[in-house]
Length: 262
Image (tube, rainbow, N blue to C red; front, side):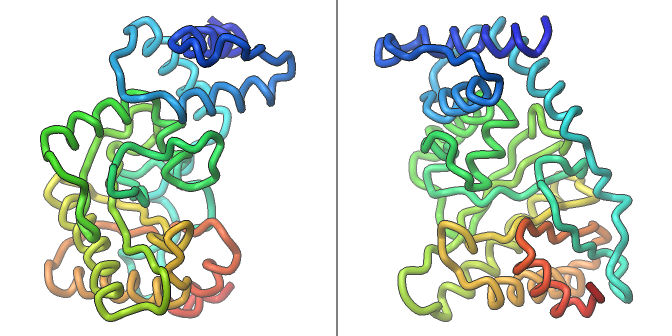
């Protein structure tokens, strides 16, 4: 099945799941079809789904992944004097590493807001609907929301990485407190610990809490780098860490902290 037919199949399947979508018309333009499919995946509750859908979805998402291109994270150049650290600007869902970090919310089910540009939304969309299904199972078994500063690990499904580490960062509503700083550092420690426990040789961090959760970019980066360096010193781990940024602002901040020439 080609991408066009697979996309239409998935859209029709997801529309058929709810009478709320009875009046939704499938657009003719490819970009609008992609947006509709993504929006439907974002909205879908973690309910059982047909295995035929998953097979077609996986083939579609993997083909889309390959069209976007895959970046070998372990081959990225390292920071001078710090052979375990790399700095890279790009889409974290294109990285082939053992684990990528998702900035999740306490519900851990992904972003339900259609087409939202947060990393939680994009990771869940490109991984596939089974990620939300698995996260729902994990959270039901846990019986309470994920505490800030902790993390969970799942397979990455249709992403090029092996695992996704979902961590809940602090939400800033005023000034940044000492507790906020401690919780953000805990996010990085929790992810590193989980990665090492699961045999990961490489991990890519997004800028946890700096988007929707409003943690100021510069102190967040200072905490990220400082926590990773402390982890190396205390654990002796050889895991490679990639600080993956998406904005020029964050790139410049990390370049200054790491002493990298832009």
